[in-house]
Amino acid sequence: MAAYGIAATVVLAGAMLLVTDHHERETFLSVVAGLSAVLAGVGIVVGALFRAVCSGDIRRRRDWRTLAGRADAVTIMAPALGRSGVLTLVLFPGAPGLYHVVDAAAYGGRLYGELSRPPPATGRGPRSLSGGRVAGGE
Image (cartoon, rainbow, N blue to C red; front, side, top):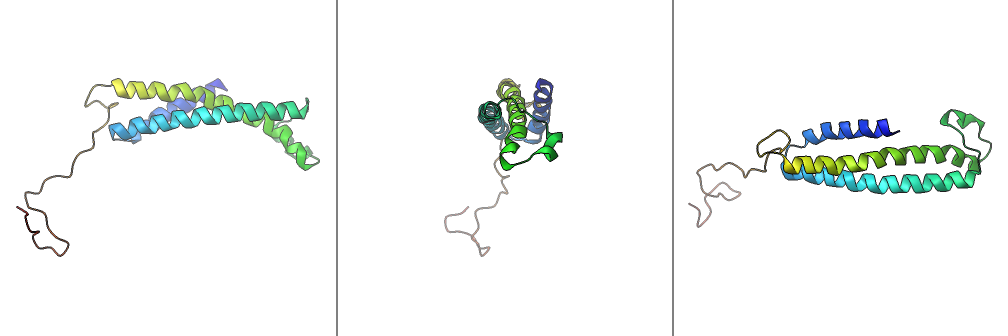
């Protein structure tokens, strides 16, 4: 499971490069870190609760057709939630780690990203919606 979490961190590093603005990149990594912490906690706690309720009758996803009643689905969800919780638990330290790498990156580098730029100046004064000059415009 830890290998899946490490692979998820590598995918996150690739997705991070698709967000070009520096501040948006940092925000993206912060949100991923927060969501992965919450999902890891929920997955592990609910998975452990389901495992305790199953009292030893834990099944795999391939055993889906052997379920006899509605309550038997918990026997399959217990390991699934536990595994997804561990996956996101490994992703959780990866996102803040990438955040600190982006924060410490050299200005203008690939990891730093671009800064938001103001729109280019056209040299003309402000215009109204009808296309005429605005009073006080240059």
